[in-house]
Image 1: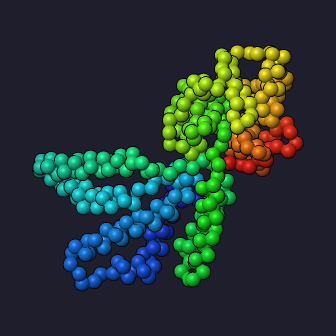
Image 2: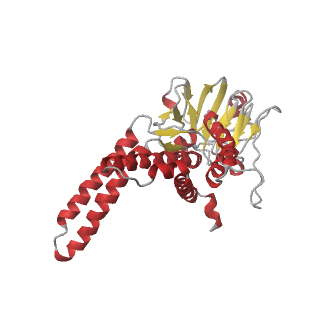
Image 3: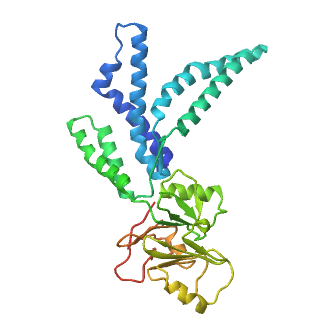
Length: 349
């Protein structure tokens, strides 16, 4: 199935196995892990160190892929595997096998109890590692070419066995640099326009509709590259809301976002839209409603998909649908402001 190449499942599996093979084919690792005459404590310690090294290499190999697809990556997995892998291999699986065997004569209960306690320990370990400070690295959306550079450099390092394999570090580091210097978007707009998330000075985000479900919240948090609860825009002091719209200032620009469903005449909206730099709505806006920089409504969203807006100088918008889509039922995304100098559009994943 060639399409699997584009999916995270294949990429993560391939990267993990390739990293393990490349590591253990290396002369240093082979020498370190080679059998030798030594006592069992040293042999056990050597095995644990080898497991940690392997886990760390796998974590590094998987990090760009996880950050690209899911915008987050675990940092302590290698250390957790020092306990999880032996626990699963030498306790859980043998206990389950013995339980199944002895169930034939009605004596499997003690072995099921051992398996249960080991599984509880495994689950406790997983939750403890996940809840530890700094356990998860998060990054916002970033350009696919940065991810491509990192993957190309990683494959170059892993697949070659000659001296020139070291040159793979150049595109790998360049791609990782793109990932880590990518700014967080100031505004995120979902593809239906109903949900808008605005960045706050403390690094968190607040939603236009505070009753958004878990799926929307998780999707927005991933795109923003945060691992924290989302607040409510209407509860903030600098945000003014009525039944139909919310208005606020962000990075020196005025944002006007619709949240009501009632029809409003264009003549009544014209002045408010003209005073806003960005106007966002999940419904069709009247022709009189035009923002100073960008107007997003039901006419434009089918062509652009979700948007990530960066309000710096110059401001720019990243669309989730890419230009050049040849499907006959849609045009290439056209996201443009009302000033000729802005914005520059770069597709985002």
